[in-house]
Image: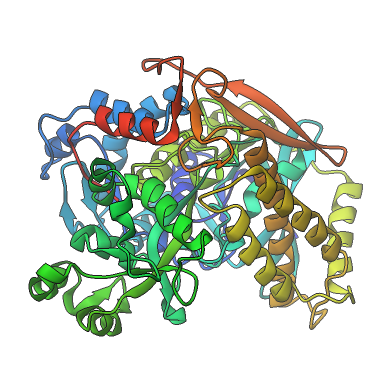
Length: 587
């Protein structure tokens, strides 16, 4: 079945919704397609969630906010904590647009739980409800439970997408004047991860296959202190937030408080801010790497003994009855108050890399735009403020830019051969009779990805990882499925996602190998310094004729320029922390 529309938005998280709303409000026919249920799948619904903006603007909206804060301070903090690898034009757009994006959400009815100096707290589900209702009211058409497998192209232009209706098994062809990809990150490539099961990098991978440039693929944020065990809670951010409240000791298997091994200034600053993702993940992962981990391969989060009697009351203020976002974590209370630790670990949480975009969120292909976590991040080498605000700002800009482009072009029909080849590849996959189930291969991929492409890397380990990637690529040719039916075939979905994941892991590994320094969340043991002389540039990567090509792009500096020198990594962290304003808010 062919579906024609002016704008096609792929992915129904916050970025996708906001892009679709922008297009529909401009009078264009807009289709929003999603792999899961519209409004109840993806990353946004799982968000904690904080919406960040400068404190002065927050106060103008009528909330608690730091009046001495400013957009300029907010800008400076984002660039500092991004290790100066940010596109400063995009940071400026984030800072300037954030207040209006958040105000409109409030006007659309989100539930406000609390506010901080620089943030509003609201459930992710509340954000999605507000966006869904707005999108419906402005006439956006929804297609849910449809998996987009490939982009359709004509020369250097994206003209639509090919999809599979997961329930009926029907092939769907979406033809459009412009496409916005907002499918999120690729958390599913790692174990543990703090994302939803849908996040397998589909949009980024299909953009790469279509010829779009990707950028900064080496930068992956791991949230520290996520639950590793009990297994049924694995990946939960509950303990990550819990530690920010209690600031309790983190122990290795020798009973040592591992945080005491490091500079107290850095630790104190990190524990209570977004810096913990960069710093505490590094520290805990080193203990795990060097054999001082817990029974299941993590570390132990505990409560401070001298404050244990008052902790329950404090924790209940944040998490009544130890419940958090619909989950019941009361059994963890028993462990902590009996003097035992909870096994925690870093977990993949955010991807700074993605589809390379210009200042208006256009990719290197005509007609293709990206928003949210699918787009190369404005946060540079280290994300420190809310991705929820990012999704709103980037979705709005991408949707508006796609709309402006769509008004200048007409819909083009794809070539018959292109459709035939895509259908043939899917049917071949359905009828494959190899040796490897996609679920089994994915389990191996997740384990090795975390082990070799985690918070600490080196050349030898990255090269070994890329050897694994080559092995997985060969095994993809020998996938087998339990069934060859097209209707809701979980094996088929997993196989398509697995292909996307392996493609992105290869590009991420190659980028990590090429960046011979340590910057932000990319730490190289063999290059433990931040090199502002040679490495103030982005790594761009693309596929062409089966080959992977690397390019380098200087960062866009508008206001802040770092000193032209080389720092030890930890000296750079300390310097950036000292350059940070005292305003807090957001996690």
